[in-house]
Length: 468
Image 1 (cartoon, rainbow, N blue to C red):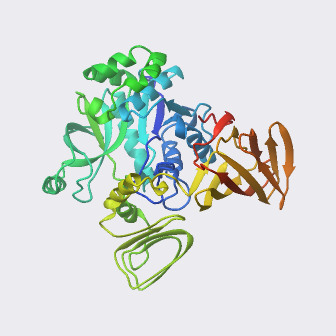
Image 2 (spheres, rainbow, N blue to C red; image 1 turned 135 degrees about the vertical axis):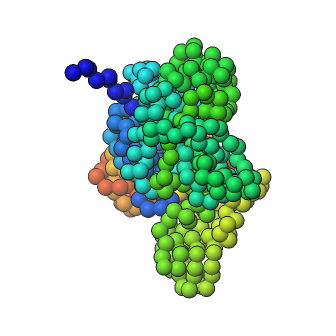
Image 3 (cartoon, rainbow, N blue to C red; image 1 turned 180 degrees about the horizontal axis):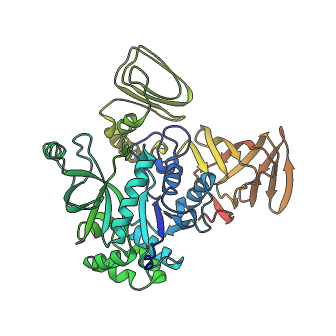
């Protein structure tokens, strides 16, 4: 029997950068939606990791993210999977998806990927209801990529959406279609015609290709092509000077051999509270409730209240989202206007636009309980065996009160254990570190005092998570 050709290895890249505003007040610049659990259970990033592991082995799965997010990306991924060392490929700056994907591919080659292996690229902030259908679609996409195509997954449209780009399918192949053309976001009349025709699909932003084919197609974008030919180190050094351009515009729309595989798997980009409502489970009155919610004679509502009881009576078609520092109420169908509220908050320099009242960290989480002009009170939880960075503050002092567990506290080189009911004071400019040496979660109340209490008044001297 003749030898069977070697099958290519399959690598995965998860795009985990970006900051979201359309799901405010849950999502903030400080904590974008990919790091949130918007339904139940795992975060969107964690769902993506588990979904990608259906088609990519764990030792070949990586994420691309900026240094601001790298520690949190690695932490959340390791909570659900045994991802490899160096799981996060760090972007020096945010330059859109084309430079990010190229950086990821160059890093994969340094890790052993060949030009003829297959790379699967997926965003970290999408919902896919049917994971088996996702795997089946990607299996077909991998075959098409191995045959020399740049491949994208197309989502069968369920309604005339004007917020997505579209893909027009061409000739049918064995498990996929050739792509006739990409279409920019249409107006409503065009979107209605696209849906009616059955030939147009939403562009889901999931790509599959080999590095060899990518390099060939990239020649139509000379600035990126020339930059990548200089090698990984030079590309990394020049990264901030690269054009900020999407992978669709830089590569896919210019490529000669493009294939599309249909993904009919309950996909959503969760781009607004309305789209989240669409994918949530609902009761018999079409209400979707998250958290501590009590509804009486309500219909077609989405209520997200995770910090206190929310009770609603005799209302319809509302979206209500309660967070510790902000309450959003809007009619269903109007949630895209949330971005206008966020812009107004930014103009007024309101912290609610960017700062998350409850934020996940690689070592645990914190919640802001109270904040005034010269003091702030936080509830901080540190996971067993974890510790914060060795740091100091230029503008504030801190008082730590242990509520549960035992803390190992270091202040200017002197180490002490602080038990339940005990406290420690950290003067301004003192080098200090907080650690949980125990087997249970460490919970403390932190009282900050000073003329400036921003999170950027942290000077890190040593950090387990390599944050800057």
